Image (tube, each protein chain N blue to C red):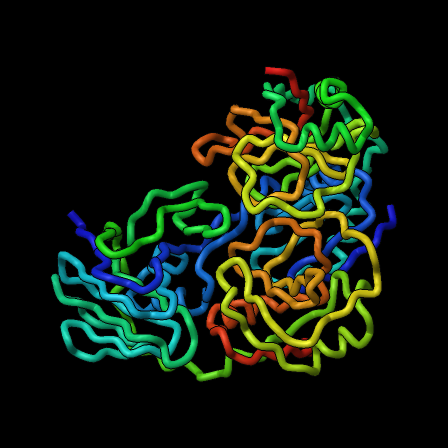
Length: 202
Length: 286
């Protein structure tokens, strides 16, 4: 596999153009010891050393050795089901923007099976792919200063649940009262990379 | 009982810091840890502790602390006036801190952060394997303000070997960088401006990032960058065109292009950049 390998400071490399970053990250982890951290993004994978410089050749070799699957493997992957009260502040606005009834928006959102493409932005914030095409609207023009914990949201091709209050520019469809990030649990994140997720009406 | 250390008063909250949380970025958990690792490690070595243990990160000095028993301690980092029980001690000097004597830090003459290490270490409740306070993610022991205490760990420690460590006085404001990973998102004159012009540290800077004002770094690509993992030291440029250098509590991913990345050896210097300081970037010599 030939993918762009970009220098990222003096201890890391960024692999670009990756179709399934979580799958590639899982494979690359086998090639490195724990002092080298592998972090998936939306279309990228970061490979970084905690201790010193990381030579390009070792990263290139590990990529060559990895056989990236052409589609995510769905066998024996955990499915997380989250119950949602669809009372979000932007439900009506999304309905109007998409030309759908609010009930149809909800039906489309719960009808899909999502996959945790990667986590980022905040602890436990999973970017979920699988959002139906009709619900793919751009982020809000004006982000909110504070989005409540448990807010279930959509933007562009992703859905997500905010684990705790934070600024946020996504459209709020509802609220999920289940835990999403708990530092006392192992693992601390409810939505793990590669897991499948479904929503249901609470 | 090993005892405790308490804050009598401080201008800014004091933060317990160790080496941080590692390996959890795929779950969105930042690395955190002491911002100036060079100073934190030096403070620990001076008192005979292993490096990477818990110490207190003090921001812009102006703090008074007390212990309930006599301990050996050291303060490293910014150039600041220190007294213990009214007696002056120097930064980077090991001293005996008598029980119930005030340890007083003034306002640093230069720099921002100091690290207080106590022989035997501090004890706090780890969160995800670290006692570091992550101010962005709200993880780790709560920050300390007037009246708060942190326990002394009383761990076995080596006898201090040095009484004082001379530390070279280098200006904080020159940071070496490697271009990229997204320098191709920027105009050639933006890259030139980054490497030739001066920037100024703004008041909005903190452990998440050092925010700079200066020439507007102009993009040549429209549209969004899909969220990608961020690296410590990354110089991220939001639509404002004003760069931010990622600090220890930086979010694990971001959607703004990174024009260049500060080299690891210069990350501790970022911890000592004060609002109003001038910063320049230079390409690292390979």
